[in-house]
Amino acid sequence: MSGLPVYEEGRWSLVVADAFRDVAWLDRPVRVHEECDIRFAVELLCYTPEEFARKREELGIVRTAVAEGVDLLGAAA
Image (cartoon, rainbow, N blue to C red; front, side, top):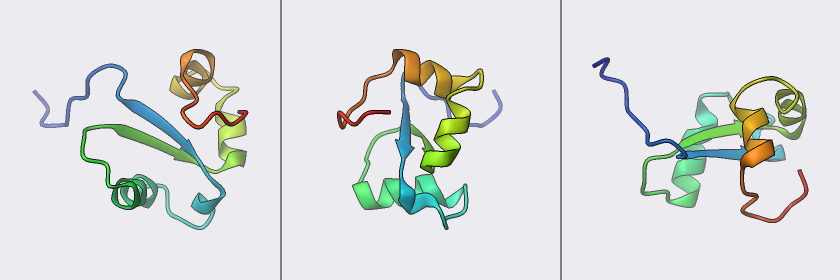
C-alpha cells in the first residue's frame, strides 16, 4: 500500500470554469471543495475552457468523461 488515497471507480468530477484562469493548478480543487462544501471523497479535475478543449482531444480520463460522463449542469460541452 502506498499511503495514497484510494478512490472508488467513478468518483471523478470534471469542473470547467473561467474562474480557474488565475488560480494555480493544485489550488483549483481545494477551492471547489471549500466553496461547494463537498463532504465526500471525489477527485476533481479543474480546467479553464481552453485547457478543457485541448484535453478532450487527448487520450485519457477527460476524453472518456466527454464520451461516457454525465453533464450535471446540462451545459453544452
